[in-house]
Amino acid sequence: MSLLPHRLPSPGAIVLLSLALAACTVGPDYRRPDAPAGAAFNGSAALAQRAAPPGARDPALWWTGFNDPLLDRVVAQALAQNLDLAAVAARVDQARARFAASRARRLPAGQLGADAAVAHQSVQTPLGRVLDARPGFDRNGEQYGLNAFASWDLDLAGGLRRGEQAAAAALQASEAAQAAARLDIVALAADTYMTVRGLQARLALARDQTALQRERVRLTRLQVSGGVAAPLQLHQAEGALTEVEATVPALEAALDAALNALDVLMGEAPGSWRAQLDAAAPIPTAPAISDAGGPASLIRRRPDLMAAERQLEAANARIGVALAGYYPQLSLSGLLGFATTGGGGALLSSGAAQAQLAGGLRWRLFDFGRVDADLAAARGGEAIALADYRQAVLRASEDVENALTALVKREVQARTLAAGEQSFVQARAQTQAAYDGGALSLLDVLDADARLLHSRDALIQARTGAARAAVASFRALGGGWNDGNVAPPDATVARQGAR
Image 1 (cartoon, rainbow, N blue to C red):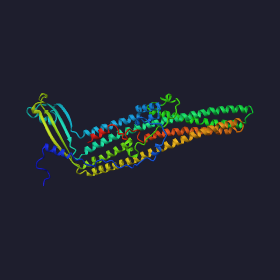
Image 2 (spheres, rainbow, N blue to C red):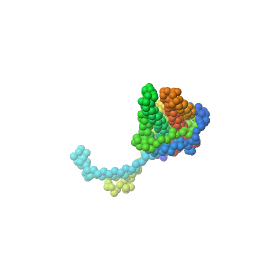
Image 3 (cartoon, rainbow, N blue to C red):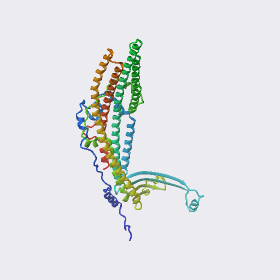
Image 4 (cartoon, one colour):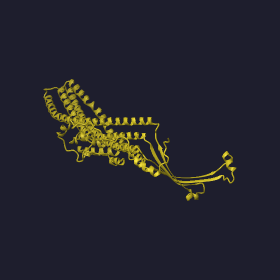
């Protein structure tokens, strides 16, 4: 019994059947997975109790809450000229082009063609001898053609639609990755700026202490030469001087590295902003920070989590692309045009008109082993993307908890050290008075100086750490928010285009 129909369906019937089948789309529809997130951040209560100045009026511009105009300029420069951001923007353009290409695959493809050929047949070849033997043989010939050709893959199983959905999700992922890169650059620029200010304060302290110790060495040397002080006191003063002096080169090297890193972040050659940053300025005070809804809304705020979820959605759509390989693929093609072997003037005559409509069916009937492998690979890719997404959520929560804890504890440390500094200042003054009165030795004075220096240096580091922890907190929470739901640009357009 023959499996072929007695009559082939008409072209109109083929189109109607194809449109009916095109309503089917194989593969699973995407559903947002459950994310391992707690009810609240552990540090939220301590965060709410901070005594801090108000934050930025526009939380999306969170760095302005530090009230440092130069920091604002640094961030603006980094956003405008950072080369990593330029590369990320180019990758978004690539993803947008791939999305446009995936949409175009679902549409009919057409092309126009024209050809002209003039031939002069040799009579010294076997074919030429045969033709030359025929009466009236003309060795010269012409051929002209003008045609419009169209083809259309009808996407019976929806593989092309799933491919378009995957490309749309990948575009959204690249846009979210661009937002994440902007957040990283802003946070890194602000963090480096805080580091610069902290190192400048520590360096100024070390230089002041060095000048103080040099003066003490000078006075002690005079006392020794006058027989008022013992040589031991001079050696002690000189040892204290070298100990303080040794900290200066290390701090200078760290400051140079931080300034160079900040220049590169702003897309400038190292040293470009040094003159503007050399002026002394206090370490910015961390503003008030909100947890912005806690872990539940973190997924909608952090662009890296948005990117991870869109990658998961793209992987889910690729399962449908692989499943479509089990189904037949139907295509239609048509040609309309003119062809003639006469003169070019006869090309557009009614006798030269030609038309063709064809349908093609392709089915990987004996290639299901490869389809099975493609499907297994697609499902494996989705499993990887799912694990990556859930891990990213956990890492994001960890980032927030660590940053909030660091901020609160560093501020407590700074307050404690500030109180201790006053005690060391009083102790230093009392020790100096006792030394001047002969009740204490120079070693006691040097010890009081060392304790005060250490306390002030620790206070500077604590304040720097608090400012940097505030930057890390803003970054971990998603970099600013207005209504708790920040979406990457063009995401809605891309999603609608895939429907």
